[in-house]
Image (tube, rainbow, N blue to C red):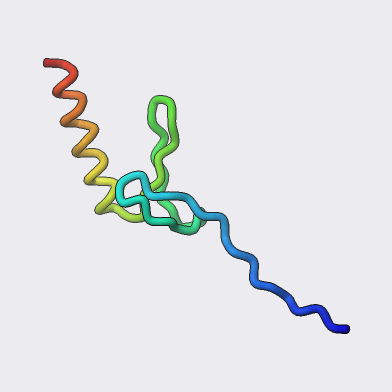
Length: 61
């Protein structure tokens, strides 16, 4: 009896902005204060960064 090779699914992570599942090998990461954030691309990273800056300004007011 022959054994068929099954393809191995890559490990995935969720983009912190759009929540799309992306292979961990292509995810862009940014280490924050307490967490590692994953992004599917620069557009989501910039969107997250803008949100963080506005949250920080609101906390300081």
